Structure formats: C-alpha cells, structure tokens
Length: 295
Image 1 (cartoon, rainbow, N blue to C red):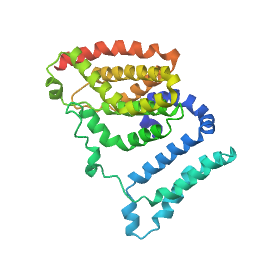
Image 2 (cartoon, rainbow, N blue to C red):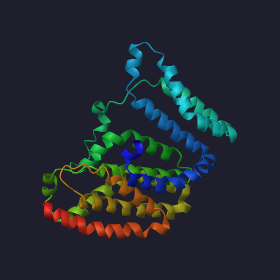
Image 3 (spheres, rainbow, N blue to C red):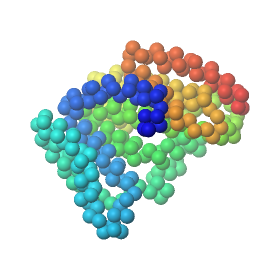
Image 4 (tube, rainbow, N blue to C red):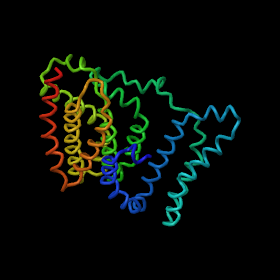
C-alpha cells in the first residue's frame, strides 16, 4: 500500500539518491558521532515538540514521561547499540542523557500562535517563504543552530546548507493565484529573473552566518564554500524555472519536490552535473511559454 501511494517514479528517485548514502551511513556515524548525536536528539526533540497526545495523556493521568522515554529509547536503540559496539562511550552517554531530558519538555507546537513564525518582516512577494517558514521553521531552526554549533567541523556547515537548500525548495510546491503574477506587470523573462533574485537573496541571507562561521574555522577551504554557493545558486534557478514550467493557478505542485531533490543530487555529483543543465534549458522555454499563455 505504501509503495503504491508513493509511486514507482518517486521510489526510483529515492533509491538513486539515498541508497549510496545508506551504504556510507555506518562509516559516517563512526567518523562523526558528535554530529550524529546532535541531529538525532534534534529529531527526537522535534517529535516531542509536535506530538499532540500530551494533553490526552495528562487527562487520563497516564505517566507520560515514562511513555515518551520508552518510545524514544526503542526508536534510538539501534544507534545506542552501534555506539556501544564502536566503544563511543561519550556519544552513547550524551545520547542517553538527552533521551532522559527530552520527555520533560511539555510544550506542543502551536503554529497559529507562534509569533516568531509569522515572519511579517519578509516582503509581501515572498509569500512562499512566509508560508514555508510557518510549516518548516522547527526543522530549519534545528539545522541552522546545529550547523553553527558544530561549524568547527568542516562538514557541519556544508551539510547544513545542503539540508536548508532542500527544505527551501519545498516552499515552491504550491501555485499562487494568477493575479499575484499579473500584479508584477513584467514579461515572463523579467518575472522569472525577479523570482530567482528574491529566492537567492533570502536564501543567502539565511546561510550567511553559517558561511561566516565556516570561513572563521576553515578559511583554507574557502573553495568548498564557494562551490556550495554556486551549486545552491544553480538549484535556485532550476527550482523557479520548473515551478513556472508546470504552473497552473492554485495547483498543488508537491510532486515537483522530487524533481528538485533529484536535480540537487545531480548538482553535487560531478558526473551527473550536465543533467540539470539539460533539464534547465528544456524547462526554461516551457516556463516562458506557459507564463505567456497565462499572462
């Protein structure tokens, strides 16, 4: 059932993207246990933050702390066992301590009342970012803080920027009303350029503190950061082009996220780099024609 709900094409894309990573996962956990612990505790904390059963468990006078601790311990058992086998005792103890502390957190995410999630200071035309932040701000916050805290490790910031880039593409999976586009009073080419510039401006503002932290600790690796910036700029251009190539007023474009992520994978794999260029040129003409028809 789950297979057919996800679809064959998306299964293939997920396999292509994540299978090579899964082969390296044990080595990555072994090499960077502190980063693994941070991201795993961040994931568990996000589960605790968004779960809606806290009030119900309190009403029935259930021992919610032990219920949560048991669930999170079972979920983390494989990682704890792996750390123990690798004799990474500090990481193991920090992870266990974090699991004991997280269930004490009783608050639940209330998106409607989260004042800092409204992002009213963003320009009105950045409605994708306003909406996207409301839905994804917890993940963005955890990744941003985690990348900053571990910026002394040369991989923390590049991985953080890559994850933030993937999340930001999700902002562009909903089509706005055609009136929003007509308000710009621009031809299709200038309109696409305007959207690309806005996306790039907001994204690079978001990652600028991370980039600065990377340069503070790893100035000799400036070329790595530069390559990530170029790759991010390429994906930003591609996302905008693809969105408006398939644009239909108020249409759900969620399926486009798989195209975005596939191209993101191609950009960061040298021998697949020509694929985004080919697709970009193809979808650019389609986007121009589609906008000309709608405007």
